[in-house]
Length: 181
Image 1: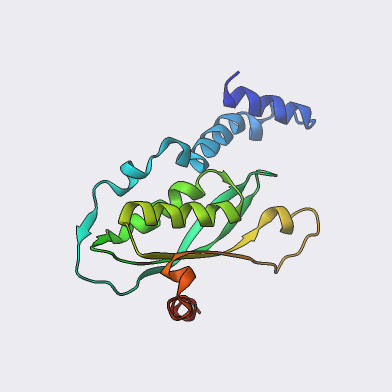
Image 2: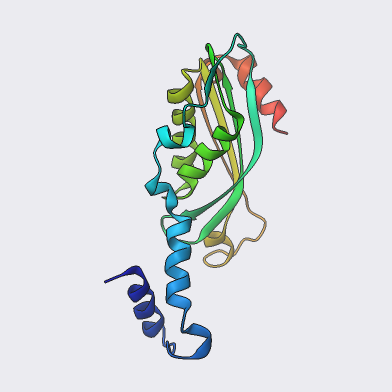
């Protein structure tokens, strides 16, 4: 059964008339949207980075902050929306600037929990760059907590992963955290 057919079945089970004007093309649109929202499954780290790794003598912190992200909670398949802050300490190589955001998107465009997403981004940046340290903080609002359940509209989940010098060196960690405020 195709994704489109499954959406038709879901609508019918909800009690909708799937032949009414407003819903005729909804299963097709919903299937297309879900494939787009989960396109990260079709991407690899190598494809996303696409060789954009450059030699550099810089060993100071490189950070891209406020990278907007959109993901789907794996528990309810409802969106969570937020921003990621990603920093690393180069060890002879720097990553093309847009590739940091593309790495965030690749992992965010999968069914996720934010805690795992944060770790996946950090480990991917570490793997690609060979950095001596990586720090990632994600702040996001979860529709599964806002639209249903406890219905808390102003809640934000903050997660962090610190690898290498970001974990072992308090000054590096503090610098990173102060820069994202």
